[in-house]
Length: 342
Image (cartoon, rainbow, N blue to C red; front, side):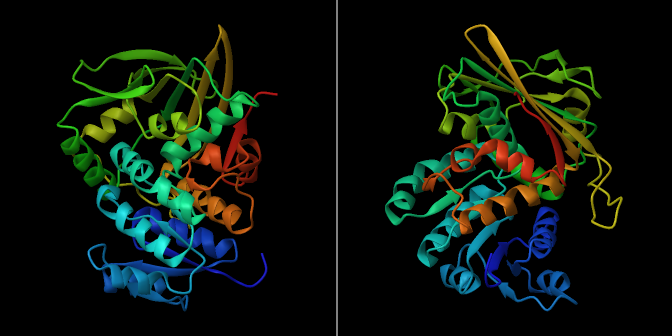
């Protein structure tokens, strides 16, 4: 990697942001902590001798100071409908790559729509949704397709043992529901659709150790933005285990509780991606622990690959378009296990 490089983390004191800071340190980077709360920044920096720079999205100068002297920025501060645009702008001004962990469908659509042309013109790399939702499913679908660039259908089924949402997850969900007027989302016929059809539950044949489980159909996540952004797929559907969907919707479900020295919860996941084309089916599976913690190595691996020239495209790009998907997934073997075709 050469000289030690500094990477700004906006939202460094949030639940996912703390995992990102720890992962950067493990990978030999120096995190530069940023966010609007000076006290919480000092708490994360304590004992680590890390720079803490207060910045807010409504003060561009503060964002410029936060990113000064850094090689890249990871945005871990939601709701991304509010933070993504200003931080991407600051990254473009600084001439550094931008990565975020946004799961918000509308925020990710905005990033592609508003910044792709400018980022391409600047030769910049902007990678939204580089996280458990959006990034991981896209990498698995891309790996399942192999050399193919399209399919008839992509199905992403999330097998969570449970979902204890963070406060940030709840706030982001509220923002997204408000933006879409309470309607649900699907990607069908090659486009995003908003609808108010009744919620349906079906059974999904997860591989072991889960096996068949009831899932909420059309529990639509950021994969409906990332996958069709670079693959010719007219139908992208995502599903969530029914018990996890109930956890998320219940206001009394507590936030995730740390169960090890890294702060990870005991929650486990299995992501089952099925790609169908011309009557044939290919499957890619990822298994691991803690959806928030695993977002950190996904985002940091993306930054590392961009900074070391292992990126395939410029502009606003999803994980599958930007990186060698099988190689990327295998590089995360310390954090998740994968079963890929071939």
